[in-house]
Length: 194
Image 1: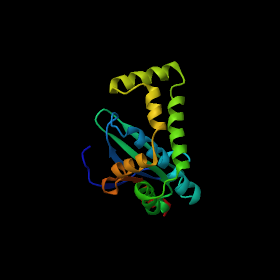
Image 2 (image 1 turned 90 degrees about the vertical axis):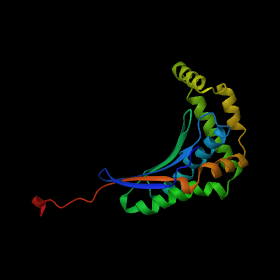
Image 3 (image 1 turned 90 degrees about the horizontal axis):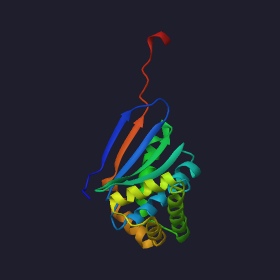
Image 4 (image 1 turned 45 degrees about the vertical axis):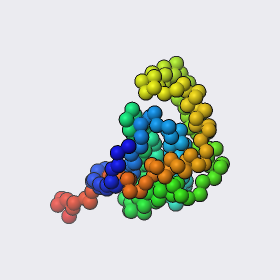
């Protein structure tokens, strides 16, 4: 996985909400720590995960908060997204980065791990419910040389607290976080309203 230094970009876009994306490079889909990375992402980014719980539920600072991981043949990305009021932009950006970074060395409980593993396995099972979805999964896995779906599910179930911590220390590095913020521009006064 090539190292990319942290970057930050702010663009003016939209009219009411600020959008924060924090991205991290990850290895490809065949990496041996794929299951641990997916469980770590679930801890942070599922609907009951840390981002949503801290930023939206506890603090009421976001409309949406989640993370996702996408891996391809030779690399991928883990990204967190939070939508917030522009007035909360700096605080929410700092909280998002902190929630990603804290998984490296902060507390991690067994029940949180169990929930995240169950979320990942359950999501995969639901994602294979129809014949079309099953065919898509089989084709994708064959292209990437991945083991059968049941074996992948077993790997997710076998992820330990130590595995999650190792994955977080490998991938959730603040020095590699690229932050992109899209926020509304400052409106210019219109002469006809003056």
